[in-house]
Length: 355
Image (spheres, rainbow, N blue to C red):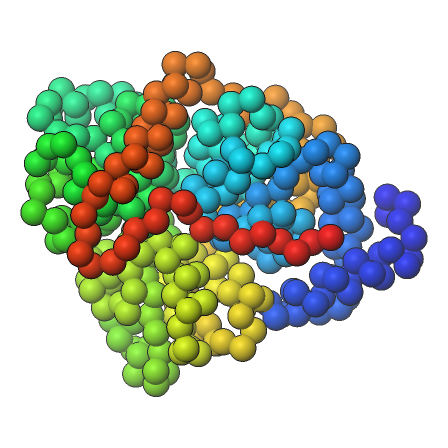
C-alpha cells in the first residue's frame, strides 16, 4: 500500500509495536496500520504540518502519528508556538477552535468536524448574553470546553487546573461559572465567593460514583484514585487527587506508588500504560463517543484532501473576543490565590519520539 517497501513497512511495524504492545497491540495489528502511519507522517512532513493528539485519543493516533500529546490547552499553545504551516488537531471541535484562536494565521484541520462535546454543546453565546442580563454584577468564567463563540461572550476562560485561581482573581464576589455544573459545585466548596453554575455535564464524568471508587479501594490495596473535577462532588471527595488531565499525568509521573485508577476517559489510561509500563492502571473509566470519532483513515484523508468543513474558520469578531478571554486567563492565573495547591496555566504536553 502507498508503494512502501517491505523493509520500510517492517521497520514501521516494529516501531509501532515497541510502544503499542504496552496497550495490548499485537505485531500483526501493528503491521496492518503501518502503511497508514507511514503515509500520514510523510504527508505531514511535506506539508509542514504538526499533528496534535489529545490524551483521550486511541493509542495508534497518540503513538503512531501524533507529534505531541496532552490536554487541549497545552496542545493549543503548541499550535501557537510551533514552526508549522498546518495544525491537524486530533480532538473535538472546541479544541480545534481554541487552536485557531491562538494561531489565527495557521491552517487548522479537524479530521472529523462532527466530533463534538457535551459540555461545549450545552451552552451558546446567546445563553451567556441572557445570563449576563440576569447577573449584571458577576464575572463570567467559562471552562475551556466551550466554543469560541461562548469564550468571546465571557470575561475569562479557565482550565480544570487553574479554575480556582481564576475564580479567586475575579474582580467581583459573584462568579458565573459555565457550563459544567459539577465543576461549579466543586469550586463553590473551595472559595468564599458566590458561584452561579449552569446545567452542562460531561457525558463521561457524570457516570462515575463514589460507591464504585470505594469498591475498588477494597479490591486493590494501595490504590491511588485520580479523579477529574468534571465529576460529581461526592466522587471528587473520595479521590486522592482531583484535577485535570495534566494533573493526573503529573501525579503518576511523580508518585512512587504503582497502582492507579484514572477516573476519566479511558484513553488516558491507555496512554499511561504506554508511557509508564512499570505501573498498573485498573478500575473504572468511560469512553467518550466524540473523541473516538477520530481514526487514522480520517487523519490521512484530511491531509490528502481536506473538505471545507474540516478547515476551522472563526469570524473575526469572535476570534478577537475569544483570544481576549484566553489571554486574560494567563494574566489572572498568577493573581489567583490558592492555599491548597499550585496551579498551572500552561497545559500538559508530551512530545512524541516519532522519527
